[in-house]
Image (cartoon, one colour):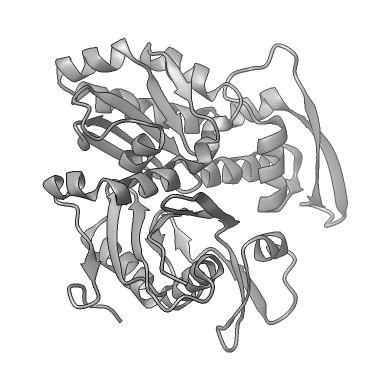
Length: 342
């Protein structure tokens, strides 16, 4: 079997892999369960994701890549190798890989990520910023000179950029995204109701009842956990509009960062963006009312793509096809010889 070229979105919560000509072929949670003594991976993906908070003795579940940076080098290599082998199966050819990174990643973070991918089985690696990949995945032509504003809200970071002619004019990354929303819900339930819940429960509440603007017809969900005082099981009801209020500080930080980015953008690019619409991508862009909230704050029309959580990986696939254009902006593949790897 011949080798593939892979586009990989190494997100905080999910790993999405695209193959040139085939589209998205893998979409798995970026969690691994490993033996704490040997540090050998036991499970990866969905099975590890559902095991979090329920681990038996001697087993731990972690996300090796957090906020676009490698947190545990050895386990990150094992996780990426597992997912790449799942796609490549029995091939003797190592693939070229285009992978996404947060816009403001440091050189050290980028070199470490390249090292992880090469040690996991890549022949060569090119890193491209997440909002640029998201724009390509949304159908933006790399040769289009008009300005496009993209906000990619994932699990670990929110990346935003003004893009023109296949490159980024202005960029901003803030560490406020899906995981921050989960943490805020956990804190709200503990402080308001004295209820201790796990991250999985908070995530389910966010998905089922979370909203960025108050609903006209409110909805109610049950939150189940442990009473902080008695230690006994406890169940309470929480409304979607309560979640909206508790997440408001997070939304304010996202809109404030977007406004600051606009202030640094040239008037002509702002005019281009006003003539079109803001592109909202990433898994958290599907939160109820978030497009309305951002559109009102920035006085812009907002478009959410179909399956916005896959835009970055699809953009990596597009980048593989358009490398002859991206070469002009300094993007190139790095091999093991060019990058000092562990």
